[in-house]
Length: 207
Image 1: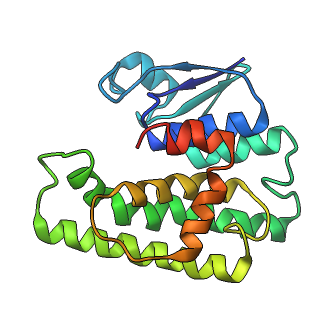
Image 2: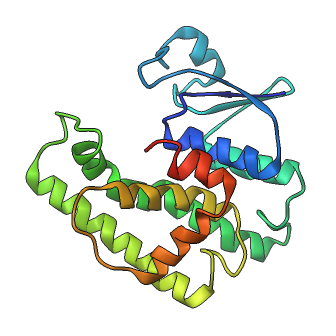
């Protein structure tokens, strides 16, 4: 059975949990980080030398970096619908996954820590406003892309890109600040809510 190391409230851990549900894969989750066992523990560093969650154990092999794990599991199960085998089609999915983990994540980190986590180290008003504006601008990019491509981020069908981006959209909706009315995003979010994996690990699975 797969082992997933990381606390359930982590957005990156929830990417992997949702993927497992989409694939119908049983797993055991083992708490690390988030106030449980610290990722600086030597036992965890044996799993991941950079000390970050999640870590996936599969038949004695260790994998880390959440988006890489999502890719691995989809490819392992031969799910070309989630991660196409064709190089050009696969790149259309992977470009959004890469953007999510780099540019998109960096927009919301400060405002999320300030307004949802109530982290006392993230309370500079100018940085909150700057982060929120950047977050909304990035979501507007997605809104325009959805209007162009159809129901999902990389085209008309659900892919791995929607797992990683959908969780960030849930965070956007969680921010207690006034947000622009983006109709494509609302329809997209409602479509995600039809999926059991998102309901369990996205909408209802924590922030």
